[in-house]
Length: 71
Image 1 (spheres, rainbow, N blue to C red):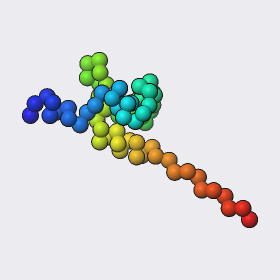
Image 2 (image 1 turned 135 degrees about the horizontal axis):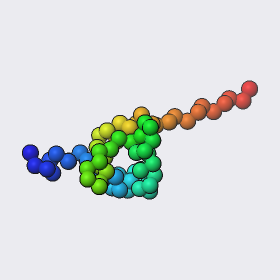
Image 3 (image 1 turned 120 degrees about the horizontal axis):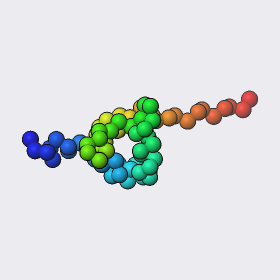
C-alpha cells in the first residue's frame, strides 16, 4: 500500500468546494458547525473523506413542505 492508495478516498477541501459548486469559505463554515462536515486535518490541509461527505450531504437533505390544498 502506497501513500496514494491510503488517500484515494480523500480530497482537499477546496476541491470538494468546487465539486459541490460552493465557495471554499462555505465549506469551511460547514466544517465548523457542531454537526458539520467531517474532515481530517493533515498538516495545514483539510482533507474530506468523500464517502463520509456523501453520507453527511444525504443526512442534511431537506424535503420541501407539502403545499396546502385550498378548501
